[in-house]
Length: 390
Image (cartoon, rainbow, N blue to C red; front, side, top):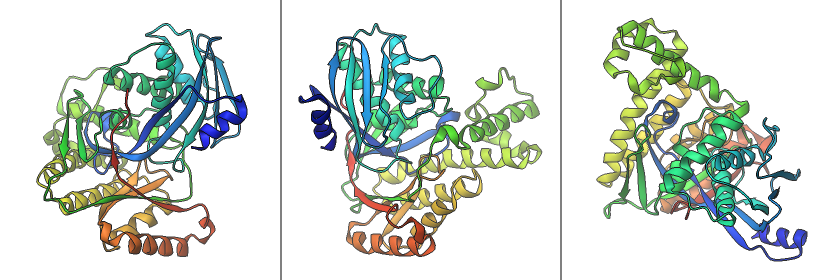
């Protein structure tokens, strides 16, 4: 791995350990975890590696193969405010872990991502890989739930992204050849094994060539619009409501939405429409996977992508084009934007027999529309994988 060679070049010794966290895809269940929805997910066999050694001084010193700037801080003296660079996620992770456990040992490390940034929860993956290393050198053993919530705190409380726990849960709970079916309200989950009768599949990742950042996108606005819809629906229905930030669409029955949706502003109604229909799609998708019907599952994933465009109103022109191309490509069972849908990539579940023709067709048609992205756009074939080993 390049991170090992780079570590040796910088520190003139071998790393003491390699930390790894996989990326994830969410075929159905997008834009719903922050409102306590249900999701489906798969970890993939690509992710974030960190080559590291402990530093007894307590200093954290990190370099990334994706970014030029070196980052440095002390485990007990992290800047109170984010610094608006790539390492904010890891500063936030240090703060979140330090609130629960005493930290004495830092690390020096080199970070490497095995795919371009955007849409595969790279922020959650780098946080978890970093936390795994920091816990290791400080003799801390986190439970799976602790890891998820500590990583979530880094994004919510320090970086300021109002995300839910979808990404972290997929990267921790997932198991190869199983679909994660998670209820983000109570954290109950099921790992549904691939049915022996299911047609074969692989996971295709199509990068638009544009990277994206949630903190600088309309992600937080969409979360507020969902919450606003829930708050208004409670008021219209005479339901008890409290603080705005403690309102979730999951608290509002679908029947209430159906009765009062005409009273909502269009944007709020569309966001809620996506959330309720996505909740239903996830439930149908889990059952389709259980019975081995990947074609029905894929169709629901395509429907999820459609709703993300027209109800949740996410997607750059590039991602919308990729999505449209995928819907008209033989051998693709289904797919959608991967991640928040602001730039980044699309994921697809594909029939391996069509692998070469799919890549050729999508690539040719996409670059015909966006020729300036040649050399930045890329396509990758992946497989399902286990979540992080703690």
